[in-house]
Image 1 (cartoon, rainbow, N blue to C red):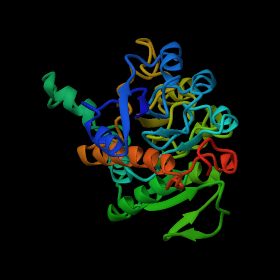
Image 2: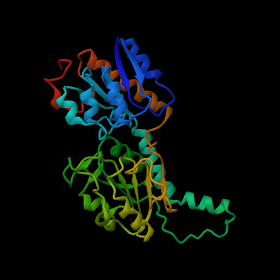
Image 3: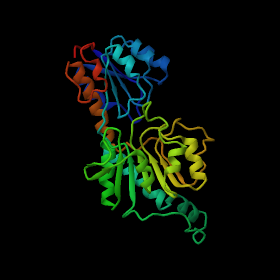
Image 4: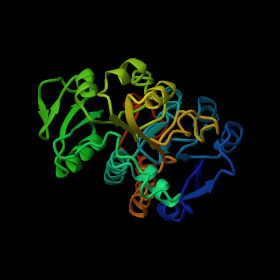
Length: 327
C-alpha cells in the first residue's frame, strides 16, 4: 500500500482525507511535529505529501525519493520549495477556490468592526464607560465609500461582490490586468490609485518576491487619513513596523490582520498593543463546510496524480514531461 505523509493540520482529525486516500489504496500517516528534521525523516516512505502550514523545504523534498505529488491544503504555496519539487519531478497542487466566501466574510467583518469601532466601544462599556465613549474618531458611511482591492483574483472578486451589496464603490489593482478597464463591474486602477482613493483597502495577493513588503511606509502615507487596511492574504505583504507607526500616529484609523510575518507573533509585537487593530490567527479560511471541502479536495488531487491524471490545480506546470508519475 502506498503512503501519504500529512505534515500538519489544524482541524480535529484526518478522517475525511483518510477515507478518500484509503479508497485509492493509500494509507495516511500524520507527522508528530512539523520540524524539517522530522519531515525529512518521514518523507523517505511517502508516495504523497499533504501539507498545510508546515514548511516543505528542499531538504524534505529531496528526501522524499518515492514522492510523486505534494498537495497544499489551501491556496498559497509560499511554504513549499517549488523549484526543488520541480527538479525532483514532484507535482505540486493547491486548492485555490475553496474558501472564497469565508475570506470575503472575514474581510468585510473586519472592515465593519474597525469602522464601527466595535472592539474599543465594547471594552469601554464593559469597563463601566457607557457615557465616556467619545465619538470623535473617523467613522465612514459604508454606502458610497470606496473599497480598494489589491489583488483581484478569485477572493478579491468575491469581496467586491459582497461590498457591492453594502453600497460600496470598488476599485482594484492587479498586475495581470491593465488599468482603465472594468472586470465584473469593478474599475481596474493603478496600485497608487487604489491606495489614494479608498476609505478601505484590502489585500488579496499571494506572497512572492514581488509582493513582499509591497505596502510600506510610502504606500501607507498615500492612503487617505482615517482610512482602514485589512490583510487576509499573507504576512509579509505589509511592512508591520511602518503599519504600526501609521496607526499610532493617527494617519490610519485601523487595521485588520488575519496574518502576520511571524506566527505566532512575539508578545512585544508593536501592533498587538494598539486598540485600533484586530488580529485573528489565520482563521479567515475557516468554516466547517470549507474545511471539509478542503480536506476532501486536497486528497482527491493526490489520487488523481497517483492515477496518472492531471490535477485540477497544478502549481508547477514546468514539471510536466519529467514527473515521476509520467504526466
